[in-house]
Amino acid sequence: MTLSDETERAIEACYDAALQPERWPAALQLLGESLGADSCTFSTGDRLCDPFRMPRSEAHEAFAERWIAFEAHAPDPHLTKAHTFRPSGAAFILEQDVITDEERATGAYYTQIAIPADRPWWAGVGFEVADTKWCLPLYRSAARGPFTSAEAAYAATVARHLARVVSLALQVHEAGVSATLEVLESLRYPAVVLDRAGVVTSLNDAARGLLGRGLTIHRGRMLALDHASNTRLQGLISCALTPTGAAATGRPILIPCEDNAGIIVTATPLTAHAANYFATGRLLLTLKLTTPASPDPTELKALFGLTTAEARLAERMSSGCDLGTAAGIIGIGRETARTQLRSVFAKTGVRRQAELTALLAALQHGP
Image 1 (cartoon, rainbow, N blue to C red):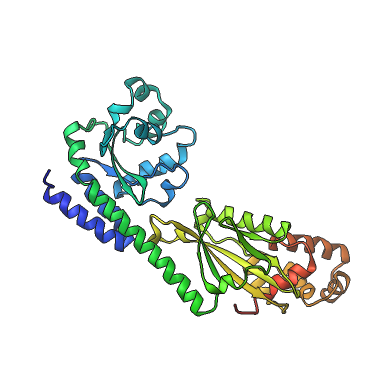
Image 2 (cartoon, rainbow, N blue to C red):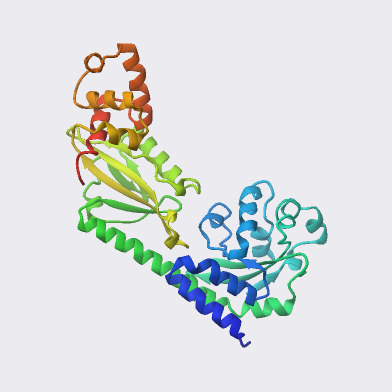
């Protein structure tokens, strides 16, 4: 089937977007409209990750926001039914092929999401990339009515183009991750990349050099060698991989190792950057080997959220003072100092003075 000029232009725009991700909303809007839709997005069927990491067309924002807010209590039936009922070999599926009239009238997805957002009609174009099933869900308003078989058959003709576009976007992203690792390697800065499941996908030589010094990789997972540190490390990774965690970088944690040194682990969600649509690498861990040093209270306040009093106490404690001596120098009572120290430990994620000393040393030493 011959593609229209409008669809051809839309596909060209999608190829451009694979190289310049900020163009995705406009490109997908052109594509959706050329296929008879009011809006569209991409999906792999992963209800936890897709809404937060997939690009969507300009006119799909309101629906997507409502979908994210309500889907947990009003599950989208297309995520399961489309895979179950799609005819063998077919590249498209229609709403009316998998959803009954009764479901449309009473289903929570329709009453809470699709109808209020005026996207009650759906069709899906299926394609595969690297043995993973993908879909281009197409949506339109109640006034326009359901997609027809002829419209869906036409939409299916773009499946091969979509597979190439997404494959290109994936390659561009992975090249960017590799370049990031190479730059960090040139600075001798240890770095590790994890996928959305928390599995290590790549690491540079500087990171390999730290394995065995408080950290290891077992069955694809980055682990700390002692139990308490590993609990903190897994918590850091888990938090950073959540959709809300991707919006901000978490506070670093300390992994103690020999010779009173430590490894500072910082997690940076790669999906916080627009250029990482379709990311398989989701999280960058940077590692910093530290030795004891005297920290700057201003930095302590900014990095860990300490109060001025807590930062002053942390500075004294990290220089080797015991609690009573530090309290006397600062001019506070021992009980007040003990209360502040508990807060410092909680905010920095450590449990002992030695750990605090090693952690704060990172503020004065490079990689």
